[in-house]
Length: 68
Image (cartoon, rainbow, N blue to C red; front, side):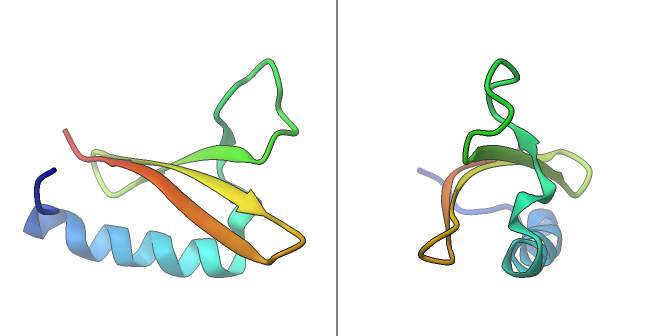
């Protein structure tokens, strides 16, 4: 595991804010199952976050953050 690059910090913070208010705004992780609760969301110039929405608990769990 490595630290988040400095140039990714602001876009990642903006993504966190978005996920607090609109967690279903991402794209389905599996296009064959578009109603599933695992989604991806691009952020910044190069970032991609994979996350899970638990609607009943009103929670979002970040599974993976990529910044190649």
